[in-house]
Image (tube, rainbow, N blue to C red; front, side):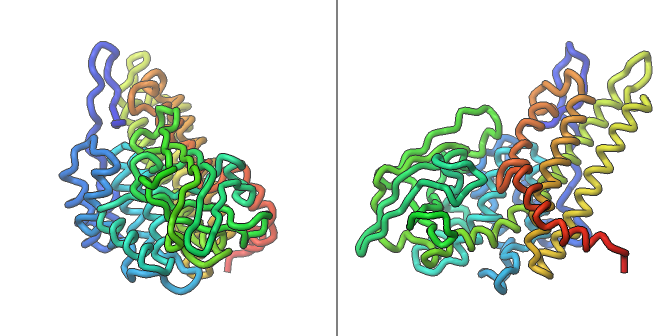
Length: 401
């Protein structure tokens, strides 16, 4: 996809002005900003996810997201969140949502999980991912259970003394098609207890593994697909982490993914707002630009307020998660992302009129951005968790100190 500006119906849609450098954050170290420009600048606009991932690894961008090399104290985010946010904003400026999603899942979730896992196989795979020599898919959402109910998943791993066998399937997995490795959440014991699960690092070309592209035109380049595991036999060193710790480790890293998703949501909605205002300034009705219509300006301003509030919440939640390790706020942020991104993109799609149906228009972006309200926890589920912690949030709404 590419961003476009309004043009009369009988002329081709021309590319919009180059986006601003969203990596140039005054709070971000200039060396990383320059590294992003050097890495992404030479890439062709239609570079696919594999090419982008190789460039990020080759130039050291991916490794720079994890300055300590290994996870910090228990509960601390294993990723430099400011740098990760700058990377996602720079990727979003390229207007290829599938590519951004592909990078987000690997950097925010899969790589930190592997970095924390002992064993030579995990360490070797982690090193290859950092250099861009390989890609990984995080396969949690199960074909036998709703995506929000991981404790009901049916994919299982049978562990024996000298081997293990994986059975089952995963659905709607980013990077499923094109990944070299699959980080699979599987059941080791019956029951819904959180200790019943295990991560398995599966070579994508192992006998019995099948990857099928998802039947959707959305998020092209993300490699989203479905996975089948038919009696996949592996050696015991393909197990990741200790027995019974899979869900606990996943939960720790979900806060990072939710913060990363909020960074992307802010960048994406801001990009669409800029494109929408540009169209409104160039499209006329009754001899006046639509941008001068007071109703349109009011609706646009309301969208801008929503995005600004989301950014403020992101800053607040990031501080609380990093300093206080308060994961409840990460869930509240995820709920806000699902609500605000959809509201803003829906209104922008209306304001763009028929232009919103064009390639790269707001209607397509809105449909693709639905992943922000689904991946990592559906908005309705997040709202239920917010209600469960109502007292916590209400106490924070007391008098300002």
